Picture (cartoon, rainbow, N blue to C red):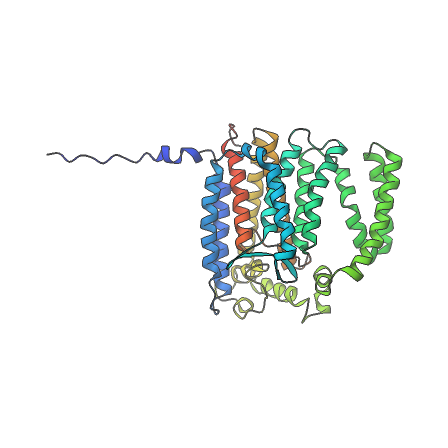
Length: 418
């Protein structure tokens, strides 16, 4: 009697829902997550901690969320964007009252033993809301720019009350990136950030502040429809911002916040205090030289000279143990992610999908630049994690959810990739 053959598994039918996703983008993100788990394991080699396996477990959960979202049509988010925005702000409003303070910021909520940062997930909600607001008319007219600023501004103020400086800066980067992609005049974007520049220059380099005021006046004169009023208005705003920045620096910011913003310029002013992180980070990266000291072999890493090296300063551990080659490999991975996000934005079938991809791109690129910049002394310490590499469940899940939304844009674009 002949044995009946078992039915063959049709792999093409199984993988059909994901055939059009960007596999390179997904693969690079997975590779960074695995590298992050390995690097975190190295930082806790002589400590009784298990954050490395939590990182890999979180990555596995995040991967499943990405695949689920990739086969769910992203256009459905349009129907829920105001609800998403409202829920986001309600949760953020609860944080100052019921949240737990960590490292000077009350930005954590706990459900039993499980803690999470609502501000991380708020980044995705903001991207969805801005993409929905800009997808029809763009930002080529000032009323739409103002509408976008109001949407961002409300959530931004709540986050600053925690205070969470890092996330508030990411919100600004997301907004500016999406406005630029929505055809906002680049001069308008410079005018929007001009008060921040004035607030910094007023206390650092007064002659440069006067020069900046003159530049702002010229930009306003040549880019705004109401030249005279715009020029005088933005000149006044920047004059006020200079004085207000000095007041905030002296009377509002706490000592540790001032240290984070200024000591990166000269960490040797306080080598055992606020500058300690930066000094040890630069020593570790320099000690790695070209090929690194090898996994689990870095003295700065293994002797725990670098505080927060599994989170904010994970790039320092990679630099010491994997050297220049490892650092360049990480940068290439982020370059590939950025490239694929731009290609997805260009090939999206509608403005909504394109803006979603650019919002995620703005979020990732800004976090990478600031995090790596602070480890090598080119940016202040702001508590911004390195995507997919730094330990942090909220941050990791946020990045994978954002990736899933972008993969949905790619999956349903109905166009060929480059």
